[in-house]
Each structure stands twice: as C-alpha cells, then as structure tokens.
Amino acid sequence: MTDINEDAGTRARDAIYTDGITALKGAFSTAWADAMREDIEAAFAEAVARPGGAVGRGPNRYYVEIHPEQLRGFADLVTHPWVDAVCTAVLGPDYEIVELGFDTPFAGAVNQPWHRDFPMPEVTRTERRLNSLAFNLTAVDTTDEMGPFEIAPGTQFDDEPDFEHGMFPPKSRYDRYAERAVRKYPQRGDISARSALTIHRGTANHSELSRPVLVLGVDAPDATNADKHAMAVTEGYWEALPEQVRAHLHCPVVAELTPIVQKHTIEGLVMGDA
Image (cartoon, rainbow, N blue to C red; front, side, top):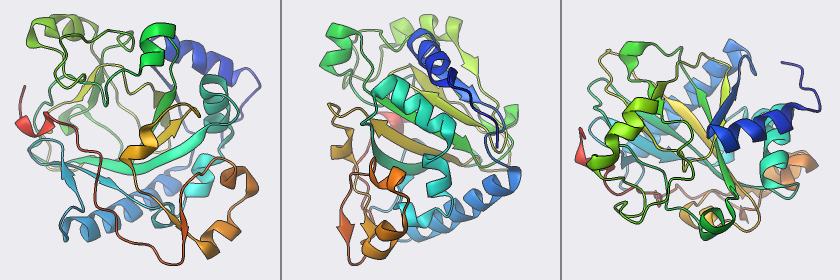
C-alpha cells in the first residue's frame, strides 16, 4: 500500500477545489482490483436478472448499487489512509459513507451527454463549499478503445440556471467542456476522488471489453445524497467491521439483506449519443 503523509489530504482538497478531481496511483494491488472485479461481475449478474436491479445510463451502459457485504474489499477501501485523509480534508471528520455501486460501459456504449451527477446544492452555490465526494476505482486497465471517463476540470462550480434537470448543460455550452476535456486512463489499483458536480461523461466503448468502475459516495453531514441510496449491512457484518468504519457508515443494520432496487437514476443518460 502506498505511504500517505499528513499533507495528502490538504493536497487532495486543493486539487478537488481547483480541478474537481485528484487521484492516487497504486493504492491497491492488481490482485485486490481483480477480486473487486469478480465481485462486481457477480453483483451485476444478480442485479440484471431482476426488475430494478440495474439502471441504464445510456445504450449498453449500466449502474448498479450494492451492499457493502457484496464487496470483499469494502473495509480495505474505506479505511485506506488516503481515502480517509481526503474525506476528512474536504468533508470534515464526521463524513458519511452513503453509496457503493458500479458503472459498467459494455461494448457498444456511446458517448454520454456532458453532465454532473446531481443538481448543485445551495451551499455550493452560495458558499462555494463542496459537501460530497465520489471515489472511483477501475476494475480493468483502461485503454482508449474502452470508452474512458472524460472530465472538464474546473467546472464543478459552473452554475446551472439553464441546465436540464439541474445536471445537463445545453449543447450551446459543449465547446467549453470539449476545450477543457481530459480523458482518464486509470489502471487496476488506482483511486480517483472528485466532486460529482464537475462536468463529465463516459465516452464510446469501441472495444469488445467491458470497463467496470466502482463508485464510493461520501457526504458531509449536511449533504442529502443518502436519500438516493439504499445500502444496508447485516448485524453480524456490522459487528465485525472496524470501529473506524462504523463511525462513518450510517446505514440500516438488518437481520437479512434485501436486493436493492435502484433509486439513483440520472435523467437524460438513456438518450444515447449526445
């Protein structure tokens, strides 16, 4: 595991407030990432076989939310020193883990419209304070043919009076995002952290391979993204978690898990190539 010094959180916070995104290379081993992919593929097979188990994010592209117990490396991830340092620096010491899921663009996935993942919170608009983070971990070594994630750095504070649903900028603004666009090519074991308000999109997958990406969503105490999610843990799993995890995991503790029916749809992403 990569050594993390005490300045890591501050540097990450500065990058997220400036560019909207930052990353740590080699946070985990490739073997850890391969186990993550196995768990993602098993969860996708289960989810796609039942109504509401997977939600479309455009042609041949799906999002699935999962319970922490479906990911063997969940505790490793949320106790990683860099993840904790970034969450603390950006969101404060009482940050809350609210989402665990994955996006998978399959062969034939097309360009998504430029978007942010939810409307800008009022605290961001009026105080320029970011109160949530999205961490991403790729399950494969990304190549250009796989439809890499594309992001427009510095757009996390773009205001959206004319954004459809508060998330989709009009095509008249696309030149701004195209000029800033940076494609990301993460490799297995890397982690990125970003504001989901930063304008971004998935690009067309011209390969024959899928490109699964794990998503970990974390809120400051005043954010409300937990309302969009439904993860839970069983009593035995909860008791076995380190106290560091329990302190930040504010989800129901249940006798038996119920398969998640996806809540977090993003209007517009079913529209195809934008």
